[in-house]
Image 1 (cartoon, one colour):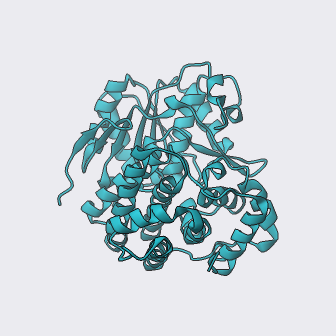
Image 2: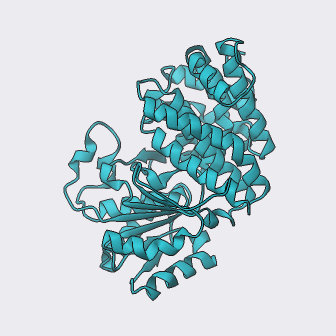
Length: 395
């Protein structure tokens, strides 16, 4: 199958396909941007990609400026810097350009530009988003990784640098007006980041599918997103120039982010505090955690795993629910090893002495409430022990 250009309208306008970055000036015109701020990270800013994009826009008469001080696991310090640049430059929209961190800071900048409250007042709890009172600037998202799916999301994650706690900030209008998904922009992504971001996409789809509640649309998107990861992630890792694999992984990332409107779970509830405390890559942390969480949730997700194992042709048909859980879990373990991802949180530098702190943060993380098995500090402590030692719960 050849990856071709396509325009989608769900969950927002998505301009997909090789070479679609050339349509960025048209996206600016469609959203009314004449003086956008392009928000990215210093790693991307050092590459020809950003300079070429700025030149493309300026040649089209669009007065773009670049803010590139976004770190991985971004904090409110990064957000404050971007906000200051936005206001000082008299900008009229944001082009969020990069991986999940840059996209999250860019979207939050567009949102906070018109707000008077602190960003923490918009944490994704209840109807906090209704506190917003000011105008929200238009957003264009340009993804350069295939993991977070933040280009089609409306809930960025920002770390409080004082408490080292990751907070999910939500407003429905933070959904980008246009997302540009050009797989050619991901060709230069290093092998390790291709693997880590791909496992992030998998974790989103898998946890959304496992989350309790009735949402057949999210389930359908999630289960096909998992299949795309199964078919294409290892291939993208092996050959970063494979545009077909890159394109399918961009789709998988967007599908995972669309599906997790339904919910996430313990993988993310544990990964968020570990990332905040140890500055680990989110995808690597999720990769380490996933099989243990599947085993932890095994008593209540068997029926869903039967459907997923059948869809993935994992050979567990007719062998019972727990055989299906094991088949999916073992496939993830095999994939994780094939692409060089960590198998324990010990490999990430996590220390047992901080397990209680991590557990306390995990159970209050916004993603904890949609785990299939209710999370308590006691069972999360036990789960962390398994993740550290490399032993499976219920084994």
